[in-house]
Image: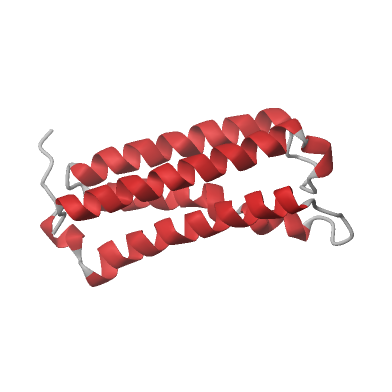
Length: 138
């Protein structure tokens, strides 16, 4: 069941994810030439990706508090990609040297995304909150 406690926990996780992703993505945008990444990623695409994925996070939370779990899980799962994908930087230049700040931003972003994904799996597989999903009338 979707308790107030779970809603508060999800909101806290989303705030942590939001802070970690905005710090990492801003650093990636500002220091674009220092991050190793695929050639198709540009500073503008970094901003666009963060904007679009963050919308998924906000919509996911709103769906969750309205007990529309399956749609919420989909949106929040997509949003968790903002953090979970951050270690992908390490695949694009083994010899590339990252600063301590860059490592911290990459891994804090990844860990925050993993905690969000754990929340979703707990909600779906252990608590089975989706069994109590509100029916939507059109």
